[in-house]
Length: 217
Image 1 (tube, helix red, strand yellow):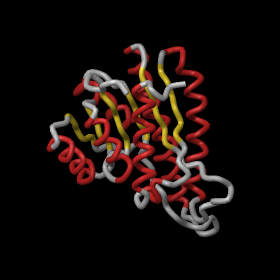
Image 2 (cartoon, rainbow, N blue to C red):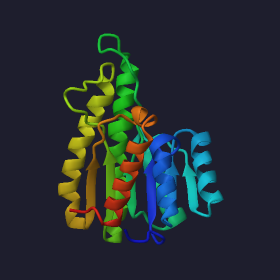
Image 3 (cartoon, rainbow, N blue to C red):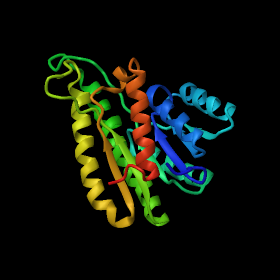
Image 4 (cartoon, rainbow, N blue to C red):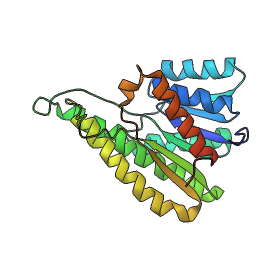
């Protein structure tokens, strides 16, 4: 895997869990890491861990559910770092409620963050990558086997299925601009991965390989 010291990665949902593990891994390879999370506390903790280890990182607290905050996020990252080589969409909310009991707000919030947020970041970062001459976008979407229906997660799984479709379309459209779009599909949700350190480490390695080019098809 190539050295990433001259590269910049934007990771959404980089406060806790898998997002933090990805941020630490990219920083350890020398990349400049732009960390987004809706919680200042979470993202500040990740930044502190990276800088304490001698890495380069900055935190950005923006809500990805709307276009304008995402536009501001990408603009600020470009102002601070000068470029975005990699985008890793890891931000997700995962409410648990039966379909017959689900609140409308939970449904819309899940789709807004998990799917619309990934669309907005792909669009805005993709435009910057097009100007640069290329880049890599990695989307993480839980697409479990049919024997793991995950009851109570209808909104979450609907957003993940949508993200899979978005990723396939983006891969086809953005290739002509030198932008590779990859979909990584763990069998576990982000909440489940918190208790699966080995599986989380494998996902981190896979994302690093895809961004470095070692895992590109």
